[in-house]
Length: 510
Image (cartoon, one colour):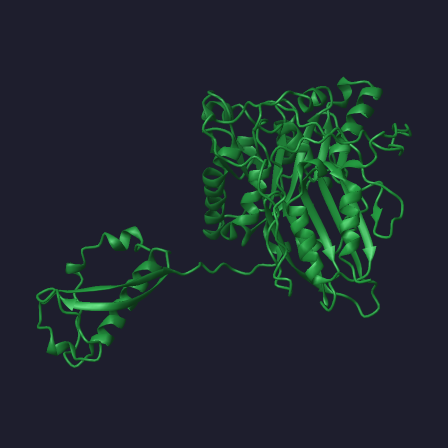
């Protein structure tokens, strides 16, 4: 690799090395290595350098013997050259417990759903908290003029604005830099209690979540607390049924499928029957996100903070499968999961024409935890997967209305599986590979959460995957008398629940 720019552009002839003539050439090499490594560390780009060749510019065709004395080859004022290897040293980030990291909440929802109203409400109600806001404006209105008309300007502790396109397209740059600027302010002594990211209505949340799962610099100090989607009860069904260009995603569908909580907003603008229809449709897409009814985006503040939906260490403290109204049991218990309209329809607007960001049509859950199987690999490709889901199932909603039973019970958009017993590591790896190569006719997996009981492993092993990015780690140890129960939650589109359940059953010790 090349040296960092500030170091490589130095005029090294102006950097004299004062050495004793009795010093060996090898010691001179080591001194140069130390100087270069110190300079690179100063510009926060640490490297490790090893010089293999050193010569006097007066005799450029002669490589010096490392064991000979400097005085045998140089006099004062001579210039030497050197050649060697430079390797970047991975940056070391602080190890902070998840619960002590600064929480970040993503507010998403389609245009006009009520995100800004919700953000203003949060800022007004949480006056005792110092909240930083990252805005992702989209349009030609001057950002400064627009912000001056919003209460957020006065109420937020800090505002970072990105106005050069949808956040999903700039997530690798602007969002990361915006988060880093807030982190830098905190290090200077500014108090920040929470960060809120308000996306445009046309932003797919997947790349934003991906940033937190792939950037160690960001995740070392910040934790993604949750994704909250605001759904307009009057218009959300139309957005979910919008037509989409080939290769594009329906952002409204993604916003529902990937969220951790939903606010069913503007209920005052629809009838009870319409509201029930909307609720059932949202539930068919995402069986696990809590749905909160609201008018003008007003819900209990306690529902919007400390969600810890992406904190794997917290998975074991929650019954992750309980939010599903039916649960698959590994021994063939009652069938369950939620059916759903597995349409892939949506609009294709809202992204820059030259946007290269992956909006969820490819890639998969990869990674490995170091057991003897060599890791859980695979990738859940969603390319071309437009399998139609079911249309709900025979349960009653909270209004007491019976939902119609689907004719397509084998297809669901989300499901949970629970089984007592121990997983064989080598079979777990094969199962993950199968999921990673899931053919289109078996559906597409968006997200997985799991608490795994692995044979001969004393700890509860937690797994979390969002599209093409996964993470896993050991949580608390199993208690001496605790039942070894594995739980896995799947959110996707048109999932073949029997295929997944049967594969799940096969990984357990018989």
